[in-house]
Length: 189
Image (cartoon, rainbow, N blue to C red; front, side):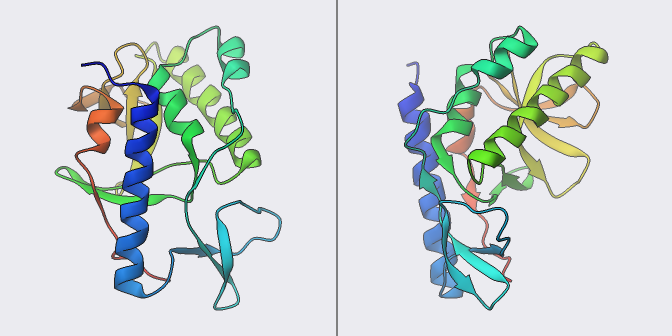
């Protein structure tokens, strides 16, 4: 059965809500991040301990697009990666997988979505220069050298070392991968 973008979006929403709920149950407040007045987000809830802000994921209601990225790269991005990054605004969401700890990356705001697009372009250009398989990152691990990425052709989720070919397949799709992770809420500010 082929999953739709709506199903992936729902999986992401459900996972992030589980994360927030687990965090609140453990710490008695919403997740927090450093407060940056010049980097506002629809995720922000309230100031916490003067220099932090509580946050929670928010579904993206406007139509975000990767058309400019695809045009600049002359490349169609995999539908799941486009859906992943246009489903919700959020800070990093920490998770655990059978292979270890990771942080899912999401845009924090419209401005951050623009920055994300620039980073994806740079990543793809690096991959092309190195004559490697085109992948799009979506998460980082507790090892600064390892990324989780989606193979742009197949949609498979892989582990890759920065600047290297992917070396370990984790799932056949991003939708499948999201269903294999659990919230990790051991960090508190």
